[in-house]
Length: 180
Ligand code: CTP
Ligand code: K
Ligand code: MG
Figure (cartoon, rainbow, N blue to C red):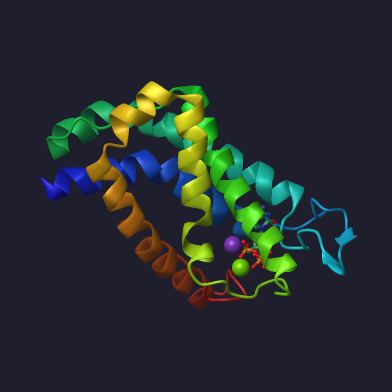
């Protein structure tokens, strides 16, 4: 029971989990805010770039389509009816995740935090909240069928744990400047 909830939650969220990590690997180049400031601080900062956002979103969408191809064997192996992603849902999850992270940077700059500063709570959940909101708007029936209250509960507990583990790992590997 809990195993199938975790499998469903993880499978459904992969397209939202991977974009931020892909952006870390792909980041660089022109910042989205073009260096502009607002009220004495950068609008977003140098950590939010066009390239990171585009590559992150694309990676999430491509992964969703790859998961669709693996759905049957994976569902059979796990004994779970795993969700498949229509293109709009995949885009909503991936781009929503990137937008959540960008929105968090906006809030960090407004609260005086420099690029790279931690904002506990926001760092771990920004992308998941906006990805879920986006997919509920874009593909409401699919989202309601996939993210039952039990699956949503697993997502909200699992996401911060995975976020901490991935970021500490990426920091240890020298891929990221901060372990959060
Ligand atoms: N990145 C990017 N574009 C994005 C998100 C991330 O290019 N939309 C890249 C940047 O190189 C960034 C790195 O991934 O520095 C790490 O991402 P993140 O921790 O989200 O950014 P921070 O540098 O910590 O900046 P902020 O304080 O604004 O979160
Ligand atoms: K972040
Ligand atoms: Mg950071």
